[in-house]
Length: 212
Length: 73
Image 1 (tube, rainbow over the protein chains, first blue to last red):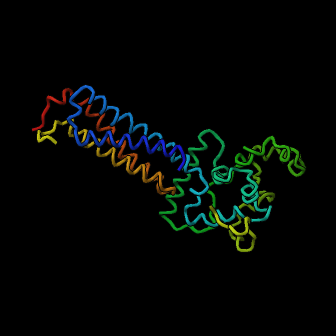
Image 2: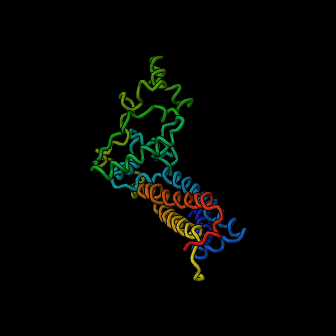
Image 3: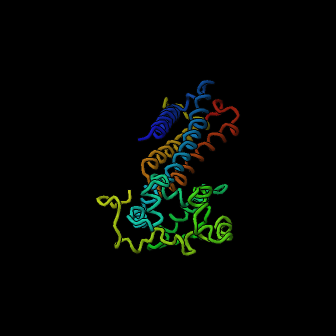
């Protein structure tokens, strides 16, 4: 258990004890000190516990294991371990070009103002779709994948800026940066998760081949 | 607890406290379960329960001017 959770659980425990005292002995609030206690126990501490809980849940929701905890995401987790550099997601994950514990979030949060919030709203939509319909892999994004997710790391990097294909025509780089030419659907980096081909590929590490 | 009838304020403190305890319990269980459903349960069930508990308490503060002289009969 990480330190954040220990602190949060301690805060929740303290809050619960004080609330329990007031629930069992509400007459404590007859005195001035009791009124202050009630204000702290029934307003300040619960607000802090709730706010801290929201932050912690938001952080948990970024974790790779969180995204892969739904059964339908299993092939996508497996695709992160493909031992083939043509598989874009695996190439990033295996080589730790993205944080392994926040792999999904790193590539699927749009790096704009409110990008985090939009990603969480999309996550809630995923849960709704999961419970109200019966989606089957391969899954499809609601909107076209934005180059912003790639450029967040690659823009300014030498291999990207000086890449031969990226500079074959001056308009290509402009189009990539303006998000009018997709990195993935333009025929360049189009093998991303490729979940339909996972039974034909080797996984790394070989003994693992697992998702978490 | 001592047999005397509770004031309106005391009753509301009990309701508010019970809602808050329930909300905190939901928060603890949701934090121990790393799954999208836990995220939803925390926000919908825990969040609403805690918000209701806090609002009932705050409403009591402004709506009952002198709570301990206002014994419920």
